[in-house]
Image (cartoon, rainbow, N blue to C red; front, top):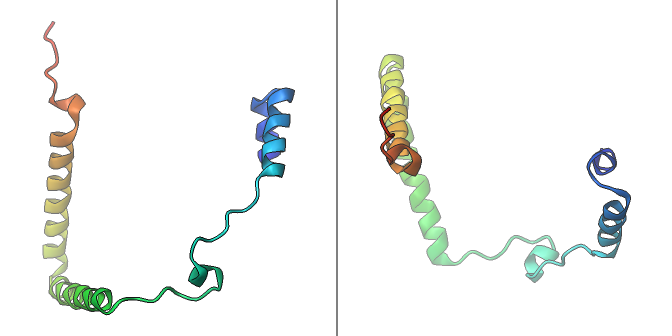
Length: 102
């Protein structure tokens, strides 16, 4: 498929340049030996503790959300979407500019 797109958008000289670059490039080697050997990287004890703590917090929050009724969950979702959109509008520099009146 890429060949079709190349023929559609590139002229002959550009296609040759792309093909030459693809042939000359070699796959990047992994910078860490653990990744190259297929072994997962070692995790420090501090990082492991942070991950366990985050999992406990997530599980506690998940239990709270699971206890909500469908109606309450729908309200919470509506509030979250509304606040997300309000913050997005607040951060959008184009919307903060005043439009000139005619």
